Image (cartoon, rainbow, N blue to C red; front, side, top):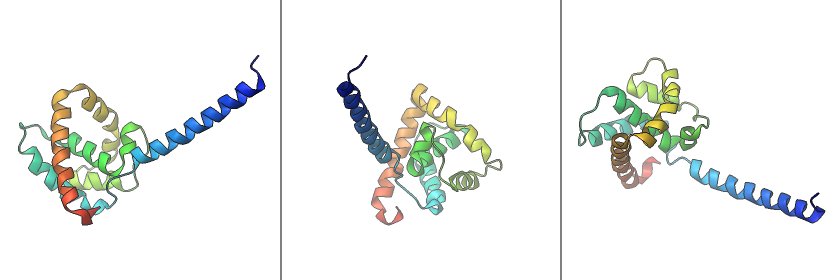
Length: 142
């Protein structure tokens, strides 16, 4: 049987770990952008950056754009968290997707594609970098 002090020490240690992890989670899930009206502009920037890469079909482009928008507006969603209100609808409107639930259906495959397919990861990183530079230049859009 554990002595009382070791149990108390372990509880205290766990509480500190939870607090530290909670703070880190908050930092990692903090969105870079909040104004959903910027999504069509981001899509224009996305298409400009994508033109510099090998041609891909519309389905892949849509997945890449959805991934980037989620990372900018609701990064926790890519790790299984809830999507920010209104984001699914705005993405769907921008991409011309009628069934907005199909955006949620793509979530599992987005992270899988990013982890498993080097071309997807490299292209996405290139496009994201280009968009982020433009965001940083336009500090008023955050």
